[in-house]
Amino acid sequence: MKTYSVIGDSISTFEGWIPSYCECAYPSETNDVKLASQTWWHILGNKMGWKLEVNQSYSGARVTETGPRPIWSSCKSERRLSDLGNPDFILILAGTNDFGQELDLPSLEMFQDSYRELLASLKEMYPKAIVFCMTPLQRTIEALDQKNSMNWTQLDMADAVRKAAAEYGDFVIDLAAIPMAEGDGFLADGLHPSAKGMALVASLAEKAIRQSMEG
Image (cartoon, rainbow, N blue to C red):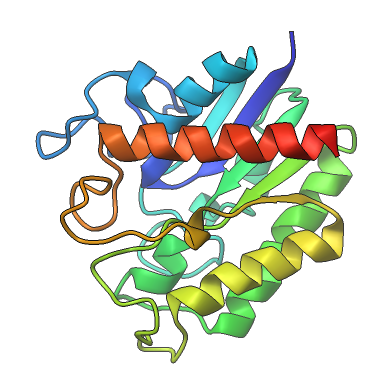
């Protein structure tokens, strides 16, 4: 059986399914995702017939070493990357906190460089693993072309992920290309997927992964 690990932020957390040192966002009273089986990564694993190695997700984590969380909470930190088990596949869903958290935001260049460093580290530490870079879902709490305090947009964020993946020969699961709108039921709070949103993410990921394998 093939195995997979996840690197992410709050969107991919679930109590009891992440390392004890990681902060958790799911389940929540304000979200209808109440079971781990409703999360995108759990649904995807079942669809693909994969076994989960490690879900290395931390609520509030960024790709860069900025923000209010500990530096080691960065998705590129050795502490987190060294704790992925021995996966055949690695899925990264991260970046939305680099763009949207209010405190100590990085520049777009810092985000791009950090994402490249993340991929370079994965290549060195897990040379046999196939990496899938997932562009963050469109947030509806900001417009796509709305600039943050460091003068970059969600569109810039998605492009940075696509470019980094292309540079390292990794596959892209382009969640950012799927329109999200307030009231469509996919996001419970404009950021975190609902059960409906989780199912959509899993479906899009499965389709992209199968297409990459066929290609």
